[in-house]
Image (cartoon, rainbow over all chains, first blue to last red; front, side, top):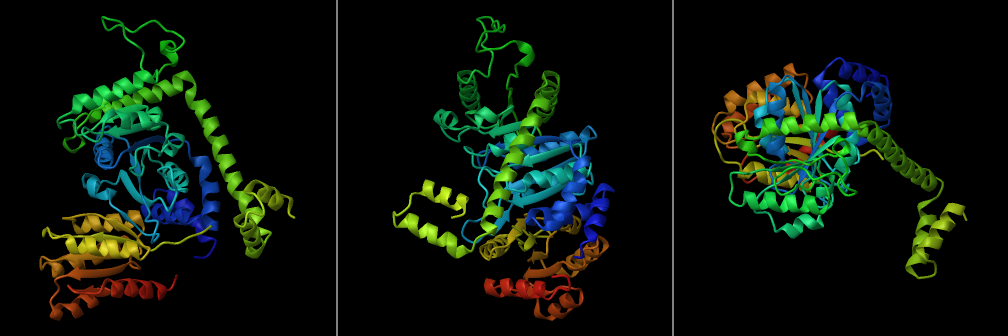
Length: 335
Length: 136
């Protein structure tokens, strides 16, 4: 592809071409030099879509929730872009991306665009380029972008830094409540969904989640007769307190989706009214800058040396002649 | 930092429910380092063309065991053309009678792979066909 075509591609994306959108996403995923140019050109057009993350253990029904939620959002006239991330095989570098299987209801709807992504070895539930792919969909004008993470359950906290509202999906019968204590995943939940709520054990799952939220002080304690306890040090006053709702859904039957869409809207309003939206945007920008700097500095540092130099240092560390900390200082000082 | 992956859509058009072959191929292509989008059973030609567009795939693998290939394949190829996806490699697997193979090729199918095909042959076919593409 000649270099000037990237400008055309960007213009076509902004004009609503789905083909251009798909092609540009591929370049962003492949981290080509022209993708960088395109992202820079698209950046002023981003920041309009509302970004919703969907995460949770494998088999909880994340893709089905995305499918049903999208239908609900579409019914109220919103357009939806979807990025669904699945794991790359660490052995071959290949991947089978199967999230579309659960999203057949969305076929033929031009207000929806689904893109499957392999995480390409990145930990944390998303691919390195997922944030940029989301930006491309944002610039393309979708009202909502739904981001579905790899299903792992305990470590995909990346999503909380990318999405504005993070939905954690659980389902009955997946494990005891100690699983819920271990995970950092409950701490990132803005909305908790217990999917497959037509299965036995659903009340146990809801109770376990509620208990965990209470232990984490994310629920205002209630008094005997159900009224909210007065604000304390652990339970700040109403206006800056987001009470994480626990919603029961049966995504395959489309049950509970309006309540979910409504919870997302309430959380969005909460973020805007409390000023958290702006605060998080600043924090997000800072984190991303630092991460990119780290990567760029590494590339710049290694560009100046031959692989043999690095290998020599590696060997000295292996031979116990040099400790890793001193090795880093030596490499930085350029000796 | 740039890394390119071959992206493949594996789809089962039509009404037969036998997806073991499609899954075996999906896995073999994954093991060959490709990114395989698996869309599942009972896909219409429209769904397949749309998924191919959104996922920007290099290859589409169609698994057809129903005998409806002479109806399904031309429709899919036509839709791909309408969407401007003429450069996508189309492969067909499943039960295709020998006498229909030349017709498949005339329709624009790049390769037909019946039962018993070595998955390595499919991988090699994809790699060499993509390497021969003008913009590769």
